[in-house]
Structure formats: structure tokens, C-alpha cells
Length: 247
Ligand code: SAH
Image (cartoon, rainbow, N blue to C red; front, side, top):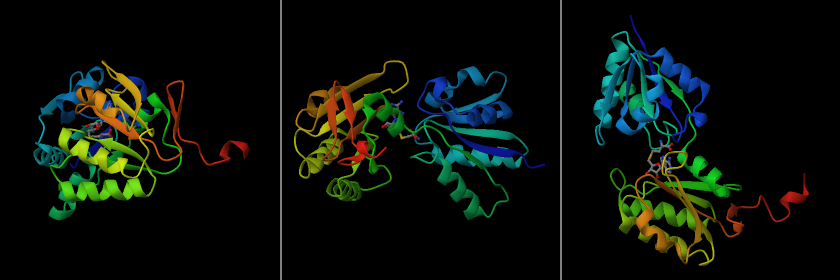
């Protein structure tokens, strides 16, 4: 008998930001697979289940195992932090299924992604159009990352940066953005949003380097567009020049 495969986003960390659908999928499952960090985020939901914890860089192995277990009749939840499509495992699982021509249709359950969680902590910096760029150069070349940064910066998108793992790449990206925006453009830095050790700061393109040491792999940066401003620490991107007058 075929089982079931849920690809579940569990949000940024706190139980309050999980969806009911995510909780139900995890409760329904007898096998839970994910990185240690994400498994720890849902430790209250997994008592009595088979739990397969994996380390970084084991994505393909994890995805294959989840598929195999589901095909063998288990109900499996493959968990991601935030949303499973945003630099998560959802597309990898679907790719493997399609390449192997397998008869399995997973259920993808969306979650609150880091950009939204970080933005909420900063105020409302994401109004108007925004772009999300992954700074990890594991799967994408530095040139491609910078090409996207340049396009987003020149298009005046608010920019959310994920995976600021290499300081070199981060500095290059911020310098490139600075060629299109004033030094006074607000920059929000959020580490461990909705988790223990949360850190939130609003700075700007001229001064963000002061915080280089606090930026780690659990940090998301949000760079404002030409209209973004700060009021009492709140980062605000207006909806339009006179947008507030229209309601
Ligand atoms: N699928 C996840 C993202 C995985 S990539 C999601 O949708 O949120 C991992 C990156 O996400 C981290 O390097 C960091 O940039 C960001 N991130 C994830 N959780 C975060 C949190 N709680 N606070 C701040 N940034 C976070």
C-alpha cells in the first residue's frame, strides 16, 4: 500500500507561527525527516514517531529516503524551516519523482518564510515589490548571484537576502546595491527571528558593516527601496506616494 508524503514548512521557529495544516500533517505522520535544527523546532509534536535527523549537505539522501518510506506505505513528513519551496526541499523531491517516473503525489504545505518573519519584526518594509536573493554560492555561481542583485537593485525592489554565509559574497552584494541606492537607505538585520536569541536592528547602507559580526547563517537582511524610511525604529516602505490617502 502506498503511504503519503507531506513536504512541510514549519515557519521560522515559534509554535505560534506554524500553520494548523503543518501541525496536522506532522501529527498524521509516523516518520519525520529533517535537519536537526528544524526537528528541534517541532520537538513537542514528534513523540513516539520515527525521527530521522540529518546534517547539512545531505539533501538528496534525505529526499530519496522520504520518497522510499512513503512508497513503502509510511506516512512521512519531510520538514523544512520557513516555507519548503523557499530554498527548501520541495522542488528537489518533485524533481526526483518526475525523473524516476514514480507514482507518488506529495502534499506541499506552505509556511511563513524568513523574509516575512524578519519583515514583521522590522515593521513593514516589504510593501510594494520585493525580491528575494539567496547568497549561498553552493548551487549558484557568484556571477549569477551578483547578476540577480544588480537586477533587483536597479529595479528598485526592496531586497531580502537569505544565507549570508560568506562575508565576502555579502559585502560584494551590499556594495553592488550601494551603487544604486543612497547611504541613508534603511537596512534591517534580523537574526533568529521568532527563535531564542532573536536580534533585530535597523541601520542603513552606510553603516550596516558595524553589524558584520552578528550576521550569521540564521540571519536575514532586508534592504529598503528608494522610498523606505524609519520611524522610531520601524522600517516602513510606503505603498505609493499618496497611497495612504486612497483608503
Ligand atoms: N526555507 C527557509 C529558508 C531556508 S535557507 C524559509 O523559508 O525561511 C536558510 C536561510 O533562511 C538562513 O540562512 C537565513 O537567511 C534564513 N532564515 C531562516 N530562518 C530564519 C530565522 N528564524 N531568522 C532569520 N533568518 C532566517
